[in-house]
Length: 81
Figure 1 (cartoon, rainbow, N blue to C red):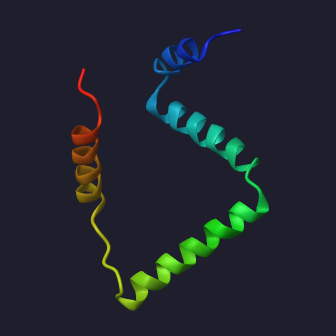
Figure 2 (figure 1 turned 135 degrees about the vertical axis):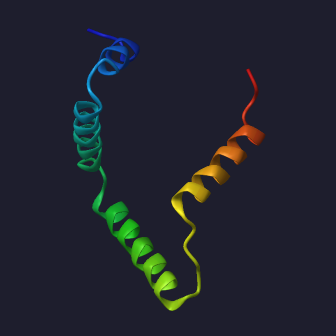
């Protein structure tokens, strides 16, 4: 049986479109294992956050700005090579 590293290296030779489809399918299989309680809690959280945005209580941050912030935090907190 192939190791995860071998599978990853082989997968990286595929086109971006096929890798995207494969990732979506793999993620979909993980969702099957989520308990109904977790799913319900996640939906409640999504509804709460939508309500906060719609009411103006919170303001959305553009995706590129959010990612830049996450990258900055990672650089600050991950050990350097």
